[in-house]
Each structure stands twice: as C-alpha cells, then as structure tokens.
Length: 162
Image 1 (cartoon, rainbow, N blue to C red):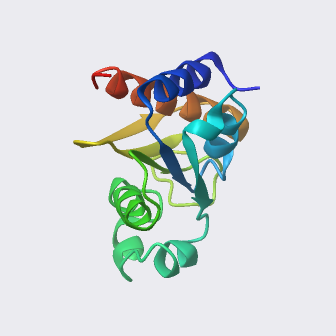
Image 2 (cartoon, rainbow, N blue to C red; image 1 turned 90 degrees about the vertical axis):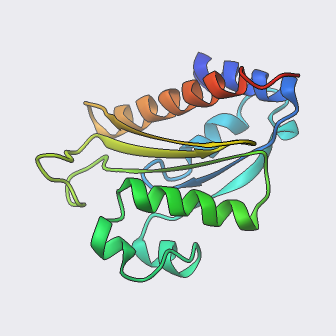
C-alpha cells in the first residue's frame, strides 16, 4: 500500500489535473508502482520506464556515450538527462527521474556512499534536482527515496494555481 506522502501527492495531482511519468533506475519501477496503487491514479499516471543498466540509459534514453563513464550512472548529470530525454518522448506535465545507490557494487565512494539518491523533476515551468543520503537496507533506502520524491513533487505542485 502506498505511503501517506504518496497518497497526498497523488490526490494533489488529481485535484490539479496534472499528469506524471517516471524514469527509474535505483527504484526499479517502485515509484510507478506506488503511485499506481492510489485510488484514481489512472487520471494522472501516464507510465514509466526502468533503465537500470547503463546500456539502456545510453541506447533507449540517448544519454550521450561517455557521459556515464565521466559522471557515473548514479549522478545528478545522468539523472537530469534521463528526465529530459524521457520527457521528450513521453509527454506529461511532470516527469521524474531517479537514480542512486541502494546496494554496494555501483559507483559508491566516500563522498557518494550507498544510500545516495539523485532525483530530477521536470515541472510545467521549471526543473528541480535533489541529492539525498539515506541509511538502511536497500528496501528502506528505496522507500525513503519514494517518500522524499513524493514530498518534493507535492511542495512544487502546491505552488501551481488551480
């Protein structure tokens, strides 16, 4: 069942008649799933894509070759490009991209440890990017990332008049 933050976010999207799409890596489809479980989500949720491996990011999302090698797959730059490129092909008022490190074995470093999550959100009149650091097991990191993303979306759409 969706968290209270996700439910509140969905209700606000429905009220404002705003559609949303997701392009996910670290959350592997959980954002789309969580939003889909809210009553009347069909009014707002267009869909999403899971691009976990760098080859999908490059081949399907057209992330320029060399970008992932330079910045890593789990970076603000790649997350931004994922959102912008997906949004070009799957129109919605809001497009959310999420990447990050939920388990060891990626691009983690002392300055970018496991638990680092990048979110890039395209809104009707602006884009916002955030970096989060969460602690816990992979499932907990994903749950915290989903709630933080829902909260970010909610804060921004509350500024949009009906």
